[in-house]
Structures are given as C-alpha cells and as structure tokens.
Image (cartoon, rainbow, N blue to C red; front, top):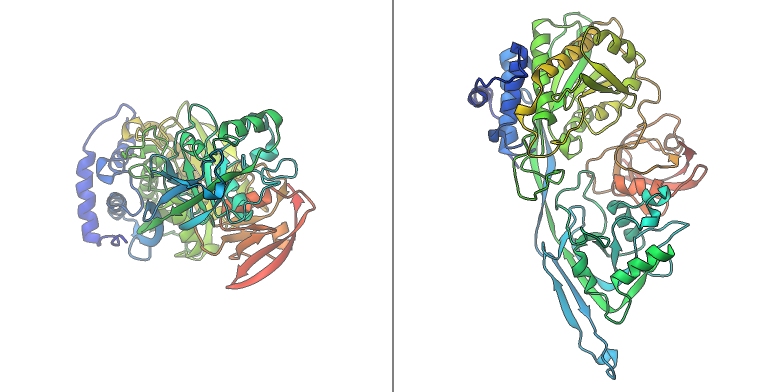
Length: 612
C-alpha cells in the first residue's frame, strides 16, 4: 500500500520543484502563452521524475502533486474526499511467486519391455525460458494426463473436444486459428486466448498450456503482466515455447507438427491423449495492491439555481509507468513510458480549461477531474461514478479529453455524439471559425473514462486527435506534442463546455445510448443482444454489472444493476471474456439460464436472446 497524498503545503512545494524541471524550453509548436503553458505542463508530467505515472508509484504521486498545485494556484477549490484527492485501491501489478513449476513424466516404450515395467523419464521446464504463466491464471497445482486439443475450439460445426475427455487433465492448445478458418467469423470470435481458456475450463480441464502455431514466432513468449480485463479465470493457464512443448509428444505417436498439419489439410479436429504422459503444473502469482487517487477540483457556478448542477471535464493522468502489460514496445526491458500524448496532453488540457473557467465562471458549476487507473481498466472513473462526491443525477454532461496533443492536418474526432440530441448543434457552434476537420462517432462507449459516465445515463463527449506510432511506447515524449494544435482543440472544448454550462436546460440523455454500439472488449461479432453494462474491475464471485439497458433481454429476464453474473447456460462467468465467449454461442431466439448473485443471494433467471 502506498502512502496517501501529501498535505497542501507539501503539494505546493512539490509542484514548485517539479516546475523547475519544466524550465523555459520553447518549442516551434508553441507560439502563444497558452501553448507554452500546455507544453510546460506536458513536459513536467512526462518527465523522468514522474517515471511514466504508473498507478501506485512515487512518479504518479509527483504528477498528482503538480496537478493539485496548479489547481490551487489557479483558484480551483478542492472537491475530493481528502482535499483534492479521491483515493481508492486497485491491483497495480502481478508477480511470480512460489512455487512455479512444470514437469512431465514420460514413459518411452522399448521393444519387449511392458509399459508398466518401464521407468519414466522426467522432463522439467524452466520458468521464463521454456514457459511463462499468464497473469490471469489461477494459483494452484494440477496433476493429470495430458491431452492435445488442437486449437481449443468447440462449436457445432467444428469441435476440438469431440471424442476426447479432458476432465481432470492438462490440455495443450494451439493459439490462433488454422489458415482455412481465418475468414470464418464464427470461429474467429472464439479464437482469443481467454475464450479458449474458458472453454477448456468448462470442459473440465485443470490446466491449459498454450503453444504458438508453426512459424517464425513459434518460440516467442508473450509479455507477462496483469490482464487489464480481469484476473479470475478459474483454471491454471500458461504459455510454452513450441520447441519445448513438442518434446513431450511421444516419439511413436503423432507429433505436434503432424497433428497441426492434419488439421490444416483435412479441416477436421485431430485431438488425442498423449500416450504414457502425465504432467504436473504449479502456478503461483502474487497480486500487488496499491492506493492511488483521482484529483478533483471545482469552479462554482454563478446562477443560484443552476450552480447545483455540474459539468464534468475529465482526463486521466496515469500512464503505464516503466512499461506494463499494455506496452507496445519492441523491447521487454523496463523503460519509462512517458505518456506525453497519452495522457499528459489531456491533463494539461483540463488544467488550462480550469484556468479559463475560473477566470470567467459559468452558470453551472464545473468539476475538473484527473482520473487515475484508466490504463488498468477505467478504474478511477468507475470508482467515482460508483461512489460519487456529488449526486450523479446532478451531472448534466461529461467531457473527456484523452490524447489531444497530436493534432495533424486539423483532424479531430469527437465521440459520444449519440448520447444526446443536443450534441450536433453544440459541436457545430463550437467549431465555427476554427481550422478543424471534425469527424464524429455516435457511440458513447470506448476505451476511456467517458464510458463510465455513459453507463450511468450521462451524456458524454470525448475529444481525441488520433492514435500514432508512439502510442504506449517510450517514444511518446513531450517534444512531439503539437501545442498550438492543442490550443485550437481546447478552444473548441471550452466553447462546448460554456454552451452546456450556460444553457437554460440540461442536455437529455438519448434513449438507448447506454448500450455500446460495438463491443470494445472483444473482437467478437455477436449475433445476439444481451444488454448489460459490465464493470471491468475484478470481482472474485463473477462479473459485476453496473447497468441494464431498458427493454433488453437482460432486463426482461430480470437482471438488475449491481447483479453479479456467475453463469450463463453451461458457462461459468468470472470476467468479461467469459461473458463474451458465452454470448458467442447463442443465436436470436435462444433461451438460457443466467445465474446471478443479488445482495449475496443466488438467483436463476431466464433470458431469451434477440438479434442485434
């Protein structure tokens, strides 16, 4: 556990010290005082001192101190639970504990020697060299026979588990799909590692070992780290180098290469029990819990009645530290991931917007929120909407700034247009006279903090200048920020905030906008609608949901906000992957039982699925 945020005096001192780091460096893209301030904010937040702003780290505490110091100097009042701070705990990492071990007992048949009289040989795998646990694996030990289950798929048209019993056994599964299945959407949607893990678990496997397909990357192990969308999988899960795994296949039986080749050629499963082979798999993971904090300030409104309503302007200030499981760096060596655009740019944006609104307040009050834990699954914003510091029904809109520092050719994307009928007029008015080419997206859900508010029926707008090659890499540095371009973006954002904050009526939330247009957590093309808003944070009992769409199969079946889904049909539900895997097996008109926990009590509900 990290210590809580510093006192106000220490905050100011820390902010001043960090301010020295920023210096007076000028940039060719900062041709105004506001642009230079933006660049200075970004340079501090994306400095070596802040070490990539990983939640729970000393670096993010320095970033928090800087933001609070800026709010205080501007005159933005504290609006958190502890001054500006809104602390919460989260899982920030996972480490390998003891014991982690994999071994195989193999009996090699010899002419004239009965198998039961042959002495087995033991093949031990070396951690980190031969294999690596997944961060979503359960902790424990599994011992049993070994089954090769092809690609680990199980559908009505193709079933790798047909004809083999994997209950109580260790399963070896190929990652990906055979070439002939790459364009089969029904198989593609079940091809993720987490989906295959769920299938193996529900078939009764004790452990699943993933191996790469034959090719140039066959012996490459994926980066070990915390899984963003949940750690509860209900089964031991590891990955192994292909050359290492191939050696446990019996010399006189079908080899891994031959089995894979037959699946490719015949388009039929080729699963079998490895003769005279047993395995012991032990996985031990230790999850790291830390305290981090959202930073919240307020500029009170001027209208006696409307000041009790709030516009939220938010941006996450955390990043991925020294390179966590979300890093896209080509190197596995720890390195500061500076996160200048993602999302020091958005954080600098809310500081400058707070300055502008503080100098000229609106009729409604404005809450400026710097969220932590976004990179770990929107945890900071989810914490706030679950336990808000002001009544949620008084939030009229949420404006989210994430990656607004790389404006190129004037192209700006604004998401959430479909969450209120007011938004097209607001955007048209706010962009007048600005050198911006604006594209819009209706969906109010996406991989950023506005999604937490959309799920609560609050209209949102998400401003975004686009992805680039430095995303989630150490090369996302302060000197690449287009500060002049960001001033243009913030001009439009400020106009939007002022229109919303001064309007006599609040924007109404659009009917049906609380359901994602597309599922951000999965590449699955589902055939059915369910209608729940999942909470992506971990719950050891199952998948917690924060909302249910009116008129959806979920609502008609009796599901409610704050239910914990534990099973859907034959599939045990522990996380969002399990839910998506289960939904992928249904078609419109299918009826199934959904088991939930409500206030700690189990319920069995009947759901009839409809088409999308």
